[in-house]
Structure formats: structure tokens, C-alpha cells
Amino acid sequence: MNILKSTLAAALGILLPGTALASQLDYSPSVEGIAPGYVGTANGETYHVAVSLTDPNMAGMKVKSIKVDFPADCQPTDVSAWLTSKLSVQIIKGKRQNVVDITSVDATVTDGVLSVDFGDDFTIPAEGLYAGYSFTVADGEGANAAPVAVTPGHMDGGLWMYTTRKYMSWEQRVSTFNAVSAMQVILDGDVQAQSAGVTLPADTRYKYTDASFQLPVVLTSHGTEPISSVDYTFSAGSRKGSGSYTLPEPVPVQWGHDLEVFLPVEGISAKGSETLTLTIDKVNGHANPDKSAESAGTVSGLIQVPVNRPLVEEYTGLWCGYCPRGAAGMEHMKNEWGDGFVSVSFHDKDVMTIYGREQFPCTTATFPCAWINRAQVTDPYLGEESPTQGLAGPFGFDKQWLKHQTVFTPVAISGCAYFDENDDDLVHVMANVQFVEPVSKKYRIGYFLVEDALEGANWYQYNYYAGWEAYYGIEEMYTYVYGESMINTLYNDVVIQTSDVKGEAGSLPAQIVPEREYFHSYDFIPSEAKNLNGTLIYQDPDYLRAIIFVIEEGGNTNILNCISVDVLPKAPAQSGVEEAAAEVMPVAEAYYTLGGVRVQNPASGVYVKVVTLSDGSRTTSKVIL
Image 1 (tube, rainbow, N blue to C red):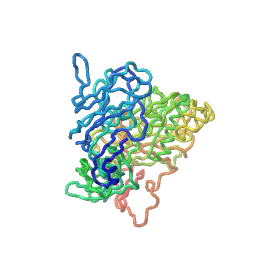
Image 2: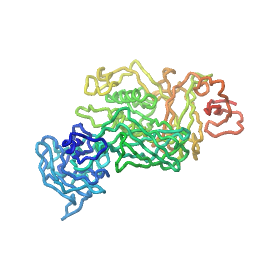
Image 3: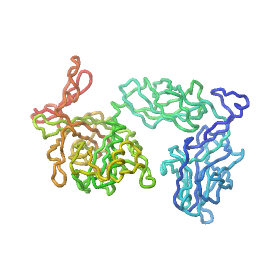
């Protein structure tokens, strides 16, 4: 697909880079080389499927034909292919009908392929049009249950669908199926060798004190040559600049498909928000004729851009034979993402259970499951991927986690945890929270004490994956696939104590001041970490961690950010910083209550002391006056 056939090049035997050629373009929202899968409603009904031909660079091209596969043994009738300026459903003579206003051609499916030639009379206008096909299946069984050819993808306009029973209006179904149509549309027109459009994100945040930042942009290929470099200009307010970016190696990108790059933007840094406009002037050293070569978006200079660590709460139990895939999924994410991935494990009805189900942050009857930021419940291994035969399925949890991790969070969290100097059964957790943008809601700080490598002589995990090699999709499943039906193993991320699972009341003020640092602390007593039967869970101080999270007040939803810190044997020197260099000197100090309120003249009591050093860094410590 997307193969350019140049009659001029064939005649002359040459191709001049950067020149426009009368060409035939095989366009598809589907990625070249991926075999189609099939989706449907499992109903006997009439399907109407379309793709958008609205890219500005398509304007003036002619739609020659379309081609699309059908699954083997599918038996469609009343087949047609069509072009229309708008997608419309109207009631005619008492029946809902798909109405097209350009052309419709009756067709048949031959050897599993629908192929229709429209002729030479249909030119794509500036506003674009839609290409589609319709057919009826009499029943929803076998191949007829899922007759629409798709491939994985997220291209806007890549899959429109209307059916007479289930999807009774024209809507994009890309997110419904996480897929785009496998339809091919053959176009005639001038296609450039070097051409790329650009799209800026609606909002980009950067650290304003830096002299430059990396601007994430999406390049859309409208050329026949691989993209190896771009030259660009940009402006924000009265400030202007230019730059060039060379990819590590040229990247061939299908016509109409995207490539994400990060372009250096220098000399534009400023505190606050403004509109930045960027233009791709050259592609591979040639002038860029693309009709979407310019884009604009809001950029905001902040005191810092917080690292977003979604909090994953996994729910599991030793009695649950399918739960090993959850443990494997969490271990896989930690191995892939390191400290950027934070997960905790709540056990149900076993020796590590500290709450009944009614007290869980997430009330669930499904095990295993994972709650991401208390905003999405999903499978901790499959994510939203569908299991194949026998419940084996691909690893998909990372896709769901990334939906949360890639979203900007307005709150930065740092902290530490350590045993009290005079009490080896007392753990202090110190939190430092800073909101970098104004917020309108109320928030709280919450804490978990978790322990890794828990074990017990009779702590056997039921394991339904023994001998199930089809599930050896990730390395971390090896233990279970090649293990016994009951495994005595080590248990990680186990929550053994918590603060209020909805956050501590009063831990943050009702009115948050942007850029102000708020301090709070919470204490745990590990010897009181017992299960519902009163049996001690806590085993080894070397395997303790504290989780600090910020949550919206008033419910279980919307955790903004979190961090995991090891519990240290003693308070860290200068908050984890080793002895400062001799020339770095304290220049100011301030005292805060444990609730984060600054105190000008502290009386006797317990406070958080913040020392500002000459290099601009800060140290925190808990002090008793």
C-alpha cells in the first residue's frame, strides 16, 4: 500500500528530488505490511464503512478506486462502493438509510476482495470527501460476525461506521476497536518527493529557567522520500528563532502517516503561557510545499515540569489462580520503566490481607485487576486486550498505563522515609509537594507502607498457568508457565499499612498557592502491620518502601501523582544529599508545621526545617525545638 507509481519517472528513467510528479498514490489509514484483522457487531445487519479524505494535501487529486478485503467464508450481499461529501443517515419511506451525494457503484466481492473503479470524474475538493462501502450479512455467525477489515491504529478519520442495528449513527469507531480501516483508496494527482505537515500539541509545558526546551511535534509525511531532516522557524510573542533537526537515520513514513520528533526551541523561554507558531520550511534540504507546513499551540514556562508517576493499585489473592498474571505484569512494568513505575498490591482473603473488600480503595469483584490513578480499572496483564482462545492474550497493560503517564500533572512530589533515630519501630515519612500551575480543587496527601519479598512456609499461590506455554508472552510469566499448580514464591509491593486511603485530612491547605512548597509527614509503626486475623505481616526492615500520593479531595478518584521511596535506616543527611561542597553555604532557613504552614517564630514543638543553599537547592529535615 501507499506505493507511488510515476509514469514520468518510468518514461525518463529519472526522479528529481523535490519535484512534483503526476502520480498514482495508493492511500490507506492502515499501516503498510500489516495483515488485516476483522471486527463487527456479531449481528446480521447492514454495514456502512468509510474513511476521511480530508487531508489538505489531497485537494485536487482524483479518486480512482477503492479496494478492501473480506474474511474467508464471509457472505456479503447488496455490496456497493461510494463517494460522498458528508456522512448522512436519513429516514426515507419509514426506513433509516445511508445517503450519499456524489456517486455509488454496485459491486461484488470476488475471492474475498471488494475492488471498485470510480473512473476519472471525482476530484477531491478543498473541504475533502469520504470514500466508503456498504454490504449486508444475513446472520452474525462465523465470518459474518466480524466482516470489517481493520488493522491496529489511531489515525483520525481512519474508521467511520454506521450499522442498521447496533451503531445506528455515523461516528468514528477508531477508539471503539483501537483500529482503522484496511481500505485502500487509489488517488491520481501531483505528489511531492519531499513534503511534510506539522502538528503541535495544544499545550506544552517546559522549565522556563532553561535556555531551551524540546518541543514535541508530529510530522505528517506527504512525500515519497524518507524524512531525514527538517529546517524550521518559530515565534512566540516578539521572540523568534530557527533551527534544524536531523534524524539519527532517515525514516520512511507512509503518505498521510505520522512521525513524532522533538525539535529544539532556543531563546523562547519565558514564565507564563503564550502561543508558539512553528513552520517546517525545508524537508531533506528542499523547500517544503506542504499545505499544512505551519502549526500553533500554547507553550507554558513553569518553575518545573513534574515527572508523572501514575499510582497502580493491584488487587490479588493467593486463592486466585489467574492472579499470577497480575504479578507478572507488575514486575514486567518495573523492569521496563524502573522508578517511573509505582505499584502497590492489596491482597484479598489471604495471610497478607489488611482490609476487607468493602474497605479497599477499589471495590471489585474481579481478580486480578489494577486501578490506575483510581480513574481506570483494567487487567494488570492484558490491559484492554482481548484474550484469545483459552484466555491467553497479549500483554497490553502498558498501553493503558501510558494513557495516564503521558498526561501532564500539575503537582511535583519528593520525599523520604526513615526509621527514627531512637525507635527502631517508628518510620517517619516526609513529603514535599509543589503545585506548578494554579488548581481550583482541593487535594490531600496519602501514604502507603509496602514491603517487598514477603514469604511464608505455607504461603502458596494458586497458579492456573502451569504448563500453559501460550501465555509465555513476557519473560516474567516464565516462573508460572514452567512452575507447579501451586507456587511458594516471594510477594512484592504488598501494602501492610496505610494512612487514610482517601488522603489525610488537612494535609494540604484549601487554597493552593502555585510554586509554594508544602510539607507534611506521616508515621508508621511496622510492628502494628497485621492482617485481619491479627497476625504480624511485617518481616524485614530492609524491604520496606513508602508511597506518597496526592489525591483529589472528596472521593476515590483522580490521583494526581505519586512517588516511591525506600525506608532508610536513619534520617538522610541533607535530605539525601551527601556532604555539600565547601563553597555551597546555607543562605536562608524556614520552619513549617507538619501540616505545611510556615511559622515565622517557631515555639517548642516538631517542625520541618527547610534550608536554602547558595546553589539554589534546598534541604529538609524534621526537627524538635
